[in-house]
Each structure stands twice: as C-alpha cells, then as structure tokens.
Length: 176
Image (tube, rainbow, N blue to C red; front, side):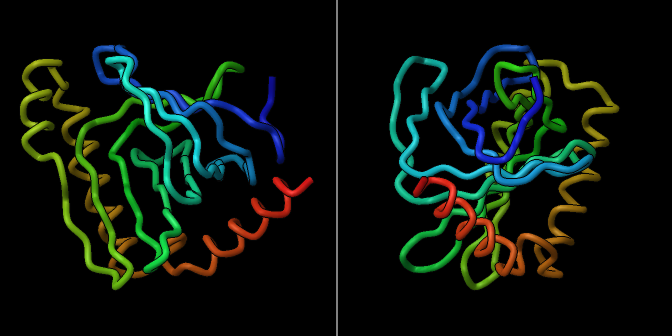
C-alpha cells in the first residue's frame, strides 16, 4: 500500500536492537516525494515501550527522509516554533506504519534559532549495549553535522515558511 495525501497512518520508532520504542497513533500524510515525507498531527496519542501513554499538546509537522539519517518534528507552540530532531535511520513505510530506528541523539531547536544536543549519555550507553557498528557511528557523526549545518543556515524546514505552509494544509485536510 502506498502513502497518499490525507491518509492517516501510525509512526513506529524502534531502537537498534529491533525493540519497539514508541508509537504515534495517528499522523496525516501531507506530502511525499522520492526523498521526503511530510506528515502532521495534533493531540495524538503516543504509546511508550513500557505501555505508558500521553497525548501531544500542539500541532506538529514531521519531516522524514529516505536518504538522511534524521527526522525533524516542528512543534507549533504559543511562544513560537520549536524543532525536535531525532538522529535516526531513513524512514520506510511497510503498509503498517512509517518506521525508523532511533539512534538516541537529538537536537532541540528553539524559536530564536539556538539549539542544544540532547541524550549524549544515552547514545554512549547504547553504543556499547546495542553494539553500534563503526559504520553506524560514522553515519551518525556525519549526519549530526549535516543537521546542525541545516539548522545554522536556516534551510528547510528551519526557515519556517515551509512549516507554516504545511500547517495550513493540515488544517484544510482535517476540516473535511
């Protein structure tokens, strides 16, 4: 089954050891091409691997890449747009859900463009625990540089026009 605009699907995040990490119960497909998939959700239920669940608080525009080792979530909060970027495998869609492997490191970007790298200790722990290969480690180190470069240069979606356009599309699609 192929993804199409307006379709509602789940997002499944895994860890390197193939264990399910987190599920977003629904996200709406806004755009897809050969390299990029854009989805959106608002107040969606998220289920953690231990069974706990919670709901997202604000609209989020999610960017998944087929050729980059990160995904980007733009959260439209009252005080501005925040980005949460996960270092992860490229996504795949298998008819069940949008899936990717989460490689622990995250970059949080604030509305003023400043950012911080998160979860370095978790990455170091999983590096040994889950036996990340040299190749995976090199890819992650390379891709965090690519991601930070995009943040600093305000490349899409960090320039904000893109995210605002997708948010309008999401509002139009969910009105129907």
